[in-house]
Length: 218
Image 1 (cartoon, rainbow, N blue to C red):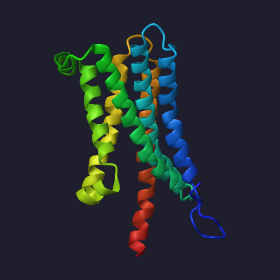
Image 2: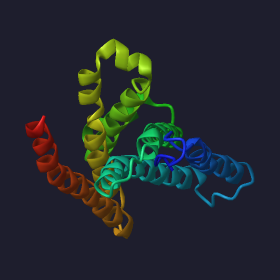
Image 3: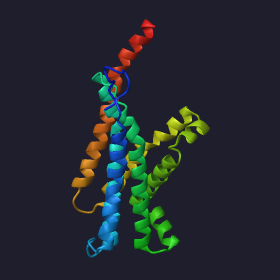
Image 4: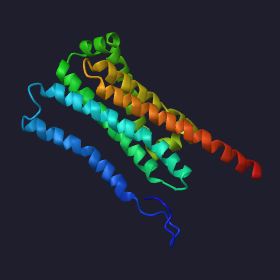
């Protein structure tokens, strides 16, 4: 982990965590392609692939949103965890990737008829919120590099990337509306999202008095 090494006073190596997240996060793509090539996606392969990539996009986004509360929790426990912040960007990129593939499969399923896509976006609310979430995720993916931070300035870049939370809400709403019968998955996603928001707010509020005391002492 990223706690300080007692002898060297240098951050311990956690590069393997980032690699594990990236390769582990891409593994479902490989499995999905393999299942498609070997005919293991069932009677309606496009629908199944669309559902799987949608769930993966949501899962990666929720994991990304969990990184900040986890880092704050580590700080509260006296641990200098850097790795949650390092993997947060990659989890966000994986979410954008699966959201993009999810939409590509949707398009293939609907057929290459742009008028039909726009009709769905404008007339079907769960498609509308899903499309908005995709726009946010793709925008954040294209502005996730250091060059974007330098061009925009950190404050504007940070304000833009706070849209991740809005994307999380939109994706959960999209998932909820898209499911017609068993709401177990959407309920679990909603609970995880709300717990993440609550943990972030609670930990930050408890850390504020300490930070204010330090400022007064200075």
